[in-house]
Length: 54
Image (tube, rainbow, N blue to C red):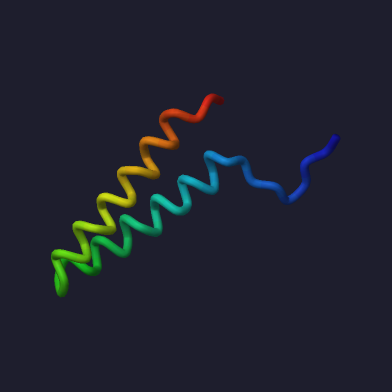
């Protein structure tokens, strides 16, 4: 079966991780507490990426 236009789970998690880290970076200048929360969320995503089998 052909998987057209489907992203793998790792790719979608990586995009989510990148988005959270980008938001954390911009929040770090104005709201460090929210930035820390975003970084924690990104770390959870990173753990899921590492735990996902290839």
